[in-house]
Image 1 (cartoon, rainbow, N blue to C red):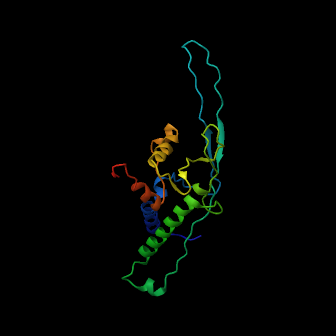
Image 2 (spheres, helix red, strand yellow; image 1 turned 120 degrees about the vertical axis):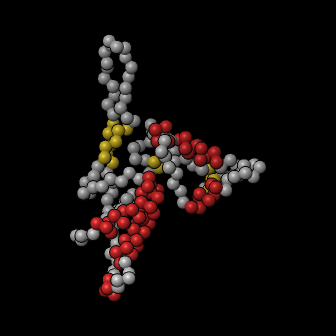
Length: 199
């Protein structure tokens, strides 16, 4: 391995948080190996009501699912010439930190959106999808709401699909949820207008 001075590492981390939009909404977990696993209960734990002196019957046992993220190592191996290192007016550490952080942010964002899961994250656009609800959809399959037109929004009341999408989330997930879209989709949404021409 290679020892990285602490100052460079901190700059890279801070720049990544500033550049990568996915990192700002992702749950970042630091691990020491590729053996990380997380257990998630499906539909949570059930409960029941009873009077003060009544017996408490056993409630349903939750179903546990294991999440095993795909791991890979994002790396950069830039070269710096001896002339650059000897030039006292050139901050080679700052330059390397900035360049590496920018490239890491781009690669990380692309991986979490569209990665294939081989030595990199599996992006949410590569996951299995279904239109069914949480109760009937297999664990790990993402739900989607169709826009009504292939690769576009419907011509009449396109904003209704955004409202439908937001409320298709279960209530606990709506709080703190984030919209993720590319710039052209955002531009299309921002141009939605009412019948009288108001945005």
